[in-house]
Image (cartoon, rainbow over all chains, first blue to last red; front, side):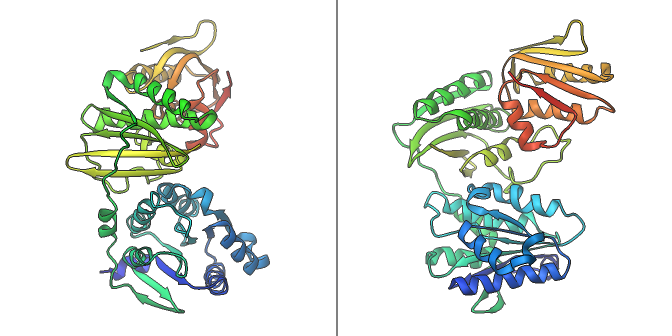
Amino acid sequence: MSTPTTEETFTHPALFYRSEAEYTDRTVAFVREGLAAGEPVAVAVPGPNLELVREGLGADGRDVTFLDMTEAGRNPGRIIPGVLRAFADAHPRVRARIVGEPIWAGRSAAEYPACAQHEALINAAFAGRPATILCPYDETRLAANVLADALATHPTVIAGGSARASEAYDWRAVVARYNEPLACPPDAGVLAFGAGELPEARRFAVDRAASLGLAGRRLQDAELAVAELTTNSVIHGGGGGTLAVWAEAGQVVCEVRDGGRLTDPLAGRRPPEPGQIGGRGLLLVHYVADLVRVHTTDGGTAVRFCLGL
Amino acid sequence: MLDVGPLSGRPGIRASGEINVSTRLSWEKALTELSRQHTDVSYVELSGVRFVDVAGVAALAVTAMHLPVGRVVVERPPPQLPRVLDLFWPSLHRIEVAPR
């Protein structure tokens, strides 16, 4: 069920499109409508679609912020803080208008659950805020379950040129559905750590990640992200946990498990206040990683992040 | 472990070891002392620091943000420090980093 008051302030339609021409027509019209109303407009979509919108807008695109979602939103978990909130917060007191396309046909099976949860959590992150976020879905190339999920993560759907309320809208169910158990391969190196072993855990991760081929800034990012996750386990997850590192599908994966439960679905997805000292750990992980997956239950929490080799 | 104390001969602090959740209190205490003594330019000498976590960089950034005047020069920090500053405080002019 959608609540009218929320919809008046925050609008989050899915746009189902079937051709490049339809994509261009509808996104360009959406952008122009915002520009005409004096709204700040951003377009964050995959590169080829970005070009369609850019060409369609011509000179009118000069005041529009363009972002390639395959880079800015490589990790779906950083799109809310790093793209959507970053843009909306930079324009306080006015309605922000954004085209955000986080799901494209090349998204992997490991990425998709994080994509669906991201789409669901947009509704929580923007509840009560003046913003319009249009999410295009390629009806001809995306799987049926992806399109079905879009009906649950968007209160409104635009298909075949007409908008209707989505009767399937239920974003919480999507967050829960993709809170999936994460399997760790048997050959992964595993280390148990407690409060006194944070430096050892970090060194273990750096040694393993380096031997798997990670180097330079990506290796430094892995060290920083592992430090934040293991610190979270010490502070919030029962005083310690286990760390596992392995390589999979061209990526190094680091995973931290502990006995805590993540109760805040937006943890790690809120832009911090500049003067706040704590609470940036999970956000850091989202910012530096190519993908973050979380499984959390009363029995414990696993957070894994992937960095491409 | 973290060993932290005042610099000799110029305003500021030097530290060696690790800045993490176990050593946060002494790091924050030293930063409070730095801001109390601050006049124009304060130095934070970190060549002996192997690692600083996000909250450790945040404590430094927030200290610098609240200085009424002048700036903090961070000397030879570990690589996490410029990375975290760049991610969360990209335009914080009160901190100048002198690399390793």
